[in-house]
Image 1 (spheres, rainbow, N blue to C red):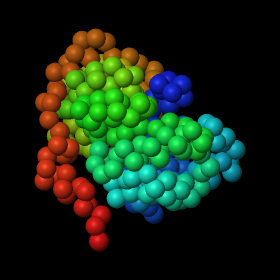
Image 2 (image 1 turned 180 degrees about the vertical axis):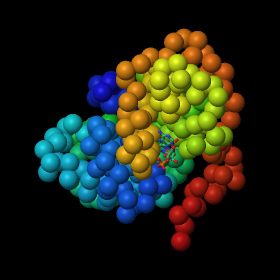
Image 3 (image 1 turned 90 degrees about the horizontal axis):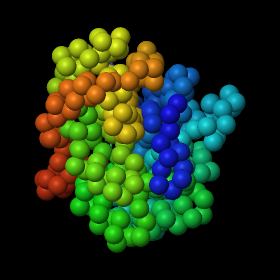
Length: 284
Ligand code: NAP
């Protein structure tokens, strides 16, 4: 495994395993499979409602002899629990579900609500050693600059939509200016735009004896971006893990760069209607 050194000195695997939209009933099996394949970094969230199942898989791994420090566990704070006091409570609830006494990475999931209160709580938890690294997700450049300039604590990571059709080059430069690691969600665009059959990606894959999924992950890692692909199928988990024995040539990197449409395939975090929708997504 290759690692990126975060701006707080901690090391994070460049390849992890995501469990968004994995049914809680399937999550334990998926995470156990992923760990058996070799994944050590697992990305979940309060909002995915599968932290307990991730925790059960971690327990199996630890009982099986894996050391806690070999794992890198990420979870995220949802909008409804932002603010200093609520964030502390939500963190405790996540940790109980995960069965952990410390967390590797805690992210503010969305750039809404009392993010400054949450950030103070996260800073405190980091100082207490309960979280090793703190970061954000879905923060656009303006939000990143505001948080960095006004809170005095630079996030270690920003997790964002990023795939061949939405490459985020300008935002990547802002993150580099602050030394923030860029982590990609939906590296495969969740299969949209028939990405796995894209002629450019599969054509490049043929040259290296790899599939489109492997080409995409390799391209992201070569851009310095951390990846957390999701799959419920162990064979695909293996494919997605098998990306460290080849390197894309500069002309192949350039051919993929040309696929950028500079548009989200999911949602624009600055669109008022979508913002309203996501803030109320879990209202009863
Ligand atoms: P993704 O990784 O882009 O795509 C997952 C899809 O690709 C699934 O349908 C999967 O199907 C398929 N797939 C995986 N490997 C494949 C392969 N080798 N060949 C063909 N198909 C393959 O989507 P994602 O789950 O949205 O993103 C990854 C992770 O990022 C999430 O799980 C989550 O941890 C995180 N995330 C974060 C946010 C955020 O707001 N911070 C938002 C979305 C996601 P099967 O499962 O059937 O194999």
